[in-house]
Amino acid sequence: MASPPRYPLELRRGAVRMVADVGDGYPNGTAAPQAVADKLGSGSRETLRN
Image (cartoon, rainbow, N blue to C red):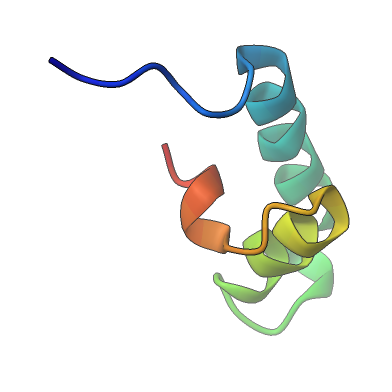
């Protein structure tokens, strides 16, 4: 059985919007998600992947 998501759906949706908003300001496709993860305190861009 899968465990429930660690972060609420609205937080994850907001993070996706943040990455989309700032994505062009970063040199590659992994830098923007990492910057957003750092700002949100999740520590890893992999958290935003799902």
